[in-house]
Length: 212
Image 1 (tube, rainbow, N blue to C red):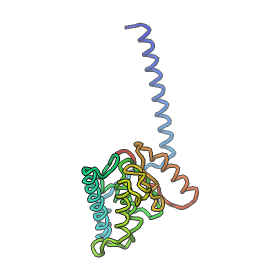
Image 2 (cartoon, one colour; image 1 turned 180 degrees about the horizontal axis):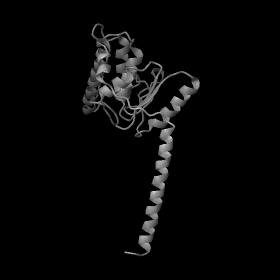
Image 3 (tube, one colour; image 1 turned 135 degrees about the horizontal axis):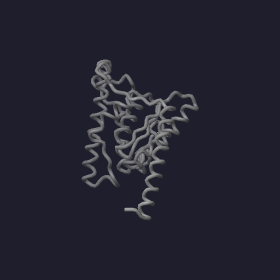
Image 4 (cartoon, rainbow, N blue to C red; image 1 turned 135 degrees about the vertical axis):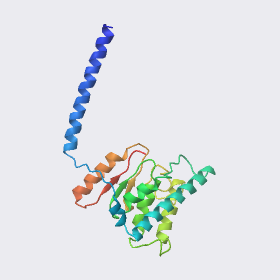
């Protein structure tokens, strides 16, 4: 039906179409100026991994999984203050992305970042030559796990003195720049960190996790 309402609706639709076209043009221009690549592992990558490296990946995943289940038990016993966002089932993505990084590379996490934090902390404190099949768990690794647990439980030995809790983990020395409660909130932070690393000429990589 014709009338004032229909004409207003038509103008709104026209404005929306114009806005969408403008956004599409800007998106194409942005993509043309960026180097976007999709990385996917193949069978040859898995074969070149090596037994020691594979054992280390599996060890980190098992530590994170046990850590998270211990936290869930503590939460059920009302020993953890505030919300608790565990990463059960997401251990592989964190360990596979972080273990290849250098100790000086940086990581920015999400509201669900226990696995990101532990993977980066263990990678930072443990020697690259350490083999979990042949050697016991070094005290530095045990300390990293205990301090992470303390932080999430709101205890003073934590990396932020227990003030960060489950969603606000940070250990700048190890290259974990922080996690936060805003979904995809780490993208601008990691962009700024990457720009700073580039300006300094360090060659360091900044990895950003986002979404859930």
